[in-house]
Picture (cartoon, rainbow, N blue to C red):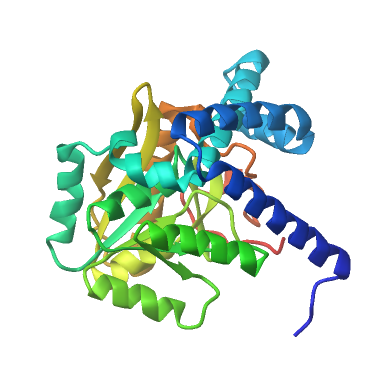
Length: 318
């Protein structure tokens, strides 16, 4: 097995130590204090992380060309502040688990959507994005006794991956890591057992994808959620945990499976419908999405103008 260069291993180790130190500092804090510090941290990051700030502004310009530069700058600053706050909230796990149900409201009408989907007995493919606080979304659902597993990509450092895995498991959410042996088998078993299988599909990653519209432009979007639902007949629920004036609130919507007989066409249609729901959630509170992510970095091999909205094209090498 080939090992990374020494400099890269050292950088990862120092990053791991920094994360452990930050967690040790934040863990015992009251939520309000952690949130306040997180906002300050986000403000500082906006000022010093020039590369990430420029990526965020570039993404905002593509998504909101009608907004002025000043408006997009304010949105980018608010995005950094929100992410800092959300990160620090998740870090103070002692207070988080104690106050989770007060922090994250889950109205009965939203809960009924998930209960009805689960009642069909084929499991639920639960789709979300990096909107609001996605870690609290899974933790809040699991806190009510619903069996939850999440599909995620391992980090570049196995030690950090283990930290994330332990955090989720303490909250009742088991992780299926994409690179682990038998991952596909674990996913199918979870759905067959009537469990909730969570996926985030709003990022351009090195997985099998469709090009579907996202803020008016084709974006490579993971197709795994649609493929799983169509193969198994599992219900599909889209949900978000977004911050409001009184804390967070969960919203959920079931998305019907397409009627197309052809599986490829059905998977494409479902992926487009799910991406549309994620875009709508982002538009509700645009500062609560990760705008520094390069969402449109992979382009179709043909010029986008020659492709009908939602038409799949093979992703070129990166």
